[in-house]
Amino acid sequence: MDFDMLGLAPKLVERLRAQGITDPTPIQKQAIPHAMNGRDVMGLAQTGTGKTAAFGLPLIHALTGEGTKPAPKTARGLILAPTRELANQIAENLRDYAGGTHLSVAIVVGGVSINRQIGRLERGVDLLVATPGRLIDLLDRRAVRLDETRFLVLDEADQMLDMGFIHALRRIAPLLAKERQTMLFSATMPKLMNEIANSYLMNPIRIEVARPGQAADKVEQEVHFVSKDGKTDLLREMLNKHPGDRALVFARTKHGAEKLMKQLDRDGYKAASIHGNKSQGQRDRAIAGFKEGSILVLVATDVAARGIDIPGVEYVYNYDLPNVAENYVHRIGRTARAGRSGQAIAFAAPDEMGYLWDIEKVLKTKVTVASGAPWTPVAPEPQGRGGGRGRPGGKPQGKPAVKAGMKTGAAKPARRRRSGGGGGNRRAA
Image (cartoon, rainbow, N blue to C red; front, side):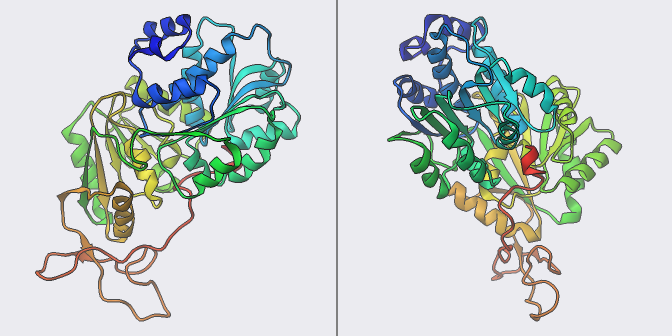
């Protein structure tokens, strides 16, 4: 099957061919026909499988036939994304798909001049890509209105839940046109997703091309059990094995990401970082350098887990395991994109064993052990003072389980806030 058979306009298919896009992915094959028929769609697919085209092409097909221009301060279609990086990537793709048409694509995100965005919205736009926080800022200033918005897309809806944007969505959705088409796309399916679907989608068709939480097929995964102090040396050793290849390194906190980047930079690696404390310009320059190859090691918090669509990322390192298991799937989805293969390498310190167990529950499989042995907790400390049983923030975290008959693993870490580390100011997203 090719895009001709999906019913897309011939000129749109020609533009795709000119960009080297000829064969639709499974999510595109299943979602596009239903979206073109006006159905609400809930699409569940692995990251990196072409979800943007699955909703973007039907939107462009539908709007291309409208000869009139959008009214001032209005948007005909709204795409909500949880992070600036993802919003930028979506807008870039939509502009490529809509090239040569009269359709306009605008983006509004935090971290850049709101006055420029206000000026852009004055003329009205066909497709508006936005992060929820900045969109609400613009709504408060009456710089945009949504009563003529007939298409709504929630991309990476599970991360919007994790980042607390459900409250923003509850405020935004009632402002849209009552007669509208809504599409929701995600790689994982937390329990609250059904609440969103029931609230904002009307009799949706559910399309599932992979089990929610399943990692991309061509990602080779492995874990190294290493002390916290030994992680940086191990990372250097592994980076030295593949000089010249792009590596994306995930840290849990903004401070940790910046500290690691500076250390790698001092060691002579072409490194940069992106996290919530970086300005939008700094984040954009770091990603641009990573794409073109002047930056080979990009250290990031989970703010980047869903916003980097670079086919040439060969390695993803989980320097710190995420405290939200589903974020692991999105992190490693930055490699093995567009049919390529890639490697995902995780480092697990003693206080991260519970995070690893949670990840393996989501994956429904064990991650291959490449070195070291699973950690086991030390004897429990007396209650009332200090830390607990090997929990993050407590005292001694454990030691390798190497003696016969000793149980492996460590006590499960205490649950932390539901955002991945380093999210920054939610309102500024």
